[in-house]
Length: 221
Image 1 (cartoon, rainbow, N blue to C red):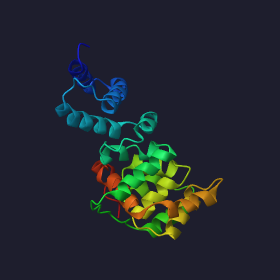
Image 2: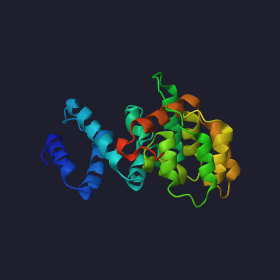
Image 3: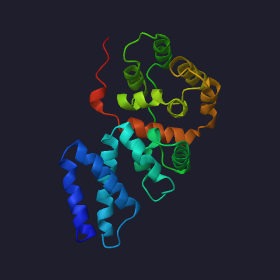
Image 4: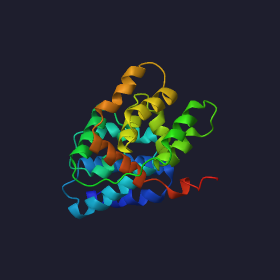
C-alpha cells in the first residue's frame, strides 16, 4: 500500500467480505489502533474504533482471546471497547478493566434478576436443559455472554455478574457451587469479595446493554 490512508481504505472494504476476512481484519485494525500511523488522519480514528468494537462484539471468544492480551495498559482506548475483552482476558487485564470501570463516575443502571431463587433451583437440576439460556433471561444478558460467564473456571466472571446485579454472596456461592464446582472451589467462592461494586455494576450494565433483543422471547406462562 502506498500510504496509511490506502491501507485503511483497503481494510474497510474487508468488513463485508465474510468471516475469514473479518478475522484478518480484526488483527489489522488492532495493529492500526495500537500504533496509529503518522500519515493517517486523526479524524479516521473514531470510525475505525467504532468498526473494531462492532467486529469484536460479533467475534467468538477464541478470537477475542487471541486479541485480548494486546490491550493491557492502553488507558486511551474507550472503556466500551476494552469491556468487550473482559471474558476472554488474562487475569492482569481483567483486573485493569474492572478498576477502570470502578474509577468511572458514569451512572450504570442495572436490571436485577427476575427470579434469582428460581434460578438457583434450576441450577440444582443437573438435567435442566439450557440453563445458560435461563440465566441469560434472569440477568438480562445475551445467551453467549451467559455461556462464557458460567464457563469461566475462576468464578470471577460470575462474581462480577452477581455483584453487579446486586445478588448477595450467598446467592453467588450457591450458583458457583452448583454450576462451577470442581477443584479450587474455595478460591472461586472468594472471588466475590475481590470484585469492586461499582466496577461490577458497570460491567454488568455493559453486558445487559449489548444483549440481543431477539434472544429473549417471552417466557411461556
